[in-house]
Length: 247
Image (cartoon, rainbow, N blue to C red; front, side):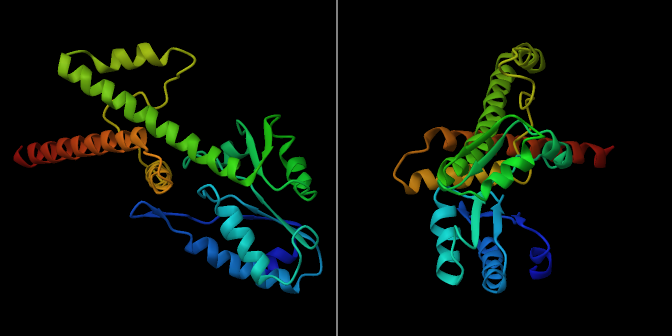
């Protein structure tokens, strides 16, 4: 890592933050911070560290900034600076999403002059660049993913109502999705939200809200609906497999 860092002025930190038992696992962030602090202690030039991993509100300040200030002899704001720039990349189109972003979010502390370098990088890609606090940037990432989870679960619930009433769920989904305020994404019945981000981020934010004594009723419902669809999908696969074996 040290060799790569020595050849740049800006480094993007992109490591996984998985969810285990509804809690965010920051072990990979801490491992990266250990290596970054060691590099900064020997570096002779200023460096901007840009964290892109999904992190719950407060993590940048209480974990990232706190760790570097305690374990790095260099001074933040003088010898190095940190920023939070959450990624909004889909698994199958990450490259296209990076070069044609809907928006860019940059979390920082006021007076961070080095973050202007980050703005300069993104300006040719989009005009929608929002510079805000660490905490707001962290929550923007979670709110975005959890809204997509909510949307998928909402249309799965509509699909279940359609099945109960004998209504064609595909026609209903199509009719609703043509509203330009809503769109087609996530309106297909029978598909739970899955992938690398939506399940873990929805679980993590629901747990985070509960720990802060705010009841995440809506997110809990979203997770429950998703579990029903997962069970339904599993049952269908088992029935289909049994029929194929019988034939």
